[in-house]
Image (cartoon, rainbow, N blue to C red; front, side):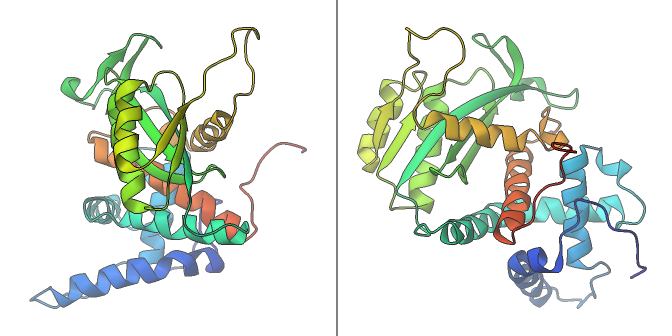
Length: 278
């Protein structure tokens, strides 16, 4: 492979070591099923770097810099990893490692749930969008569940017209399936009876944290500020500033990619470049 200048989004050797086993195991299993015995043309690390670049910079697939593998090859791997759940698996693995580094048990016992409505691009089909009347946004709704550190546990992307209860039920089911130790969750007032009752059936005590009517404007809410901060981390990725993905599963994958990139830096003690304090 021809050497190129590094981009800020590229993984370091230490970061790559955290995720390489999963991707290399995936490739080995795929090659074992290949009757022709083709030799891979591109290295997995460069494919991953290209996906991270697109996630961070927000460019279309065909605008990937020419130093990376061809954009069609990069998209092929993205689609395969999306469909086979590789991005979700990577996020789960690095989340457990990040919790251990923070002095926590690898298995969380509590979760915070919230949603965010975002506008969509022109390539998203009309039937996959909706109107969030409360937030006056036509597009999609992202629901996420985090632990008490703000680390991602579950993701769901739906039309913005979907109710908070629909998102909450799916997130609770996903989080509980991935982390059976979860027994407590906090949400806002939009997640009402149905989500609370579903949580109870799963063995999760869902607590509604309301806004304080005696304090006007913005104020920090118990536990809920954690998931709001996570949304802030995600919005640093330009690909997530608007929903550009044709398929909702691709949108979910972009969220997993963003958090995986964030956590590999956190685990290795490196930070995302920032202008603050410059």
